Amino acid sequence: MAGKWIQAAHLDTGSFTAKAKAAGEGVQEYAQEKKNAPGKLGKQARLAIGFKKMANKRKKKKSVKHGGEAAGMLHRNFGRAM
Image 1 (cartoon, rainbow, N blue to C red):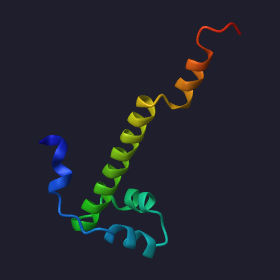
Image 2 (image 1 turned 90 degrees about the vertical axis):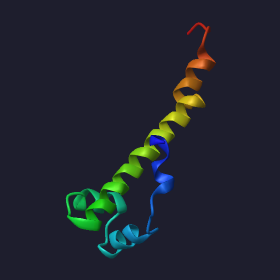
Image 3 (image 1 turned 30 degrees about the vertical axis):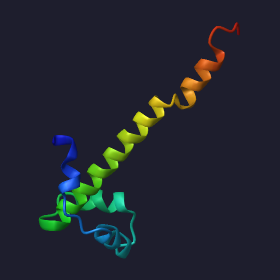
């Protein structure tokens, strides 16, 4: 159940992004600036940072699973004299 916590979360979709755009900043830049803010804003900022980490982990996992560019280079050159 620990891996499924996000499905139970009640999210106000797009509200943090709107706040960041109103401030003239990107979402992650705004999140880093507001991560220590009290109340809902701070919670939203920390959640945005967490989502970014989850996305990066997923992308890294997908890249490794599918070989990625570096793995493809190794595979093509495996066993060949240089």
